[in-house]
Image (cartoon, rainbow, N blue to C red; front, side, top):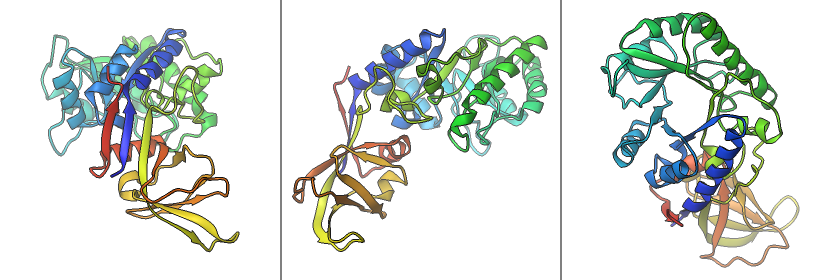
Length: 337
């Protein structure tokens, strides 16, 4: 059975490095746990590493985190559902008046002053978020609703269509929007400038606008790299999440360049989706995958790989999210706190 090995200590150390990088610029880290299904032990490592709050997108994950970590600030960064009841966070993200009303209808929540919301604005990724020309109107409506408390604004980038060259425009756009809202008399405590893609700017020594107060990061903590150019981050390990799959067949097959040694691994699209993986053994390269199998070509320098051998891979974030969800992959948490 394929195995996903998660090094809790390595994730904690990655979090320490990312939190330190953000703190050096006066920014807080909100750790995102959707990539690990809201696993409380992973979330605890992130908090111990310096995260000030935990964010997730799924109701089941948020409920799990709430039960395990009752005193931790939770952010619901998925937009509210209208077809069924949803699990609110201590902070809930909205992008339209319908979403704001859905949150308000849940009641006051913990404490006083209304339920805390962050408005998600669209800054170039072409996914979710209120258009900039409608942001002031929405913010004014939320601020006037006694059932809600407008905490701040946020954006996301490089998750859908955002290209690397647009990252600075994205963060500058949300900073400019925050400044304009404040000039209009709306108090904002927080400005979330984006996700793990922002870390490339910081690692390269670039400054962020002064309005930005925090970043939401998940990929960087789990995989030790930024989400823009996918480069390792200073002080981070890229092998905290290791996927292992068994060789179930090995043959020499005809190929374009002559006979090639092919391995068939017992893991496929049903487990990985279409997310990329990087093989730990040099000389291995993926030929393709079907629902149940992944076909790998072994270069001439690769040692023989008997049937039953486990092949180690480092998943991309897309593959990690998929494989952590698969019931056909065994999860092994090692070096637990």
